[in-house]
Image (tube, rainbow, N blue to C red; front, side, top):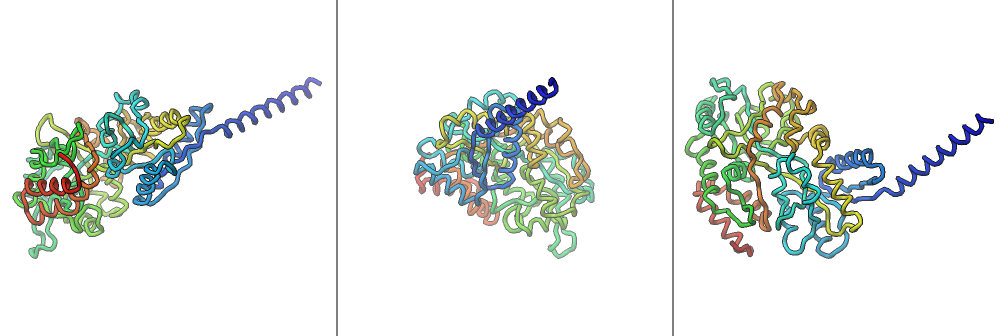
Length: 436
């Protein structure tokens, strides 16, 4: 009789627990998310599972939709302007973010949920998604600028990559590395390639010297002395020092440029950390024994040691159900700013984290065969002593377009002065209605 009662009791408990589990599933708050990169959506779903394990009484059912880059941003803007049809959360690419800051507020401020993490993260990464004093988006990575070297080409002429600390060191080494290898000029080796139809070669030095498109007060600073200095530096690498040439095809993502790298015609370049994936993805194992990562050279002690490039911030749209806002905001911070999430940014996505404390985690301190069997994150961490911020504003997308289509081509190919190309940019912006 006792055994029967015990069995009945177990059955009752099991039914109760099953009902409780069903109630949890039924009570899960659904959050919709638009992304333009499928891996971002999968990452966020994994983080939702992690959230549910840590918060069983506040479960989330994250449903994401992957949409083409241009279409997604266009659809999001249209939905927010008409007042219906937007998701709860959305990924907004850095060059598109400013489009959503013109006029009425379209996103929910995230200041309160970010505040507990500010001491742990490299806070300047929030700057591109900040407007009117509010943080609206949280990125998937830091995107720190670092140097990529072909040690084989450097060692052929006696250059030790570890001695290249300043830009003066780099230029002196580049004058040894740059050479004609076959006498006909077709297989010349250059120390660096620079973009004439892409933003990164210019944006790196502009930001590291204190320039950029906007300052912290939201003012356009295109014609600043810092930007003049940065563009003069870039032009001089090509036409004065003779150690750089335009990237084949105009930027660092063309098939022709990858061939130049793989076949040993370009000894180095600087790009954000996410460019690491381009080595195995676009050049296979050709460079695995000679490719290494090092910090950016610096202009002077105490200056910026790196800056950030590219990025995608996840935002909460104004069309979310007000009852979901607090949960969505907490989840967003949980999925991007916690220690565990920052480890996952590397293990799941291959991106450099925003928290410095995870750079000593065993998950990051791994040797990588694609980079000479070294531990790249030791060198990446060394680059993060003083990271320059990048500020965006209403005309940031237009500035990027002008930079990529005419400014850099005129600077490098037509050898126009930095002052002239920057003045031309400013004139184009004023013609579009920008006031500064």
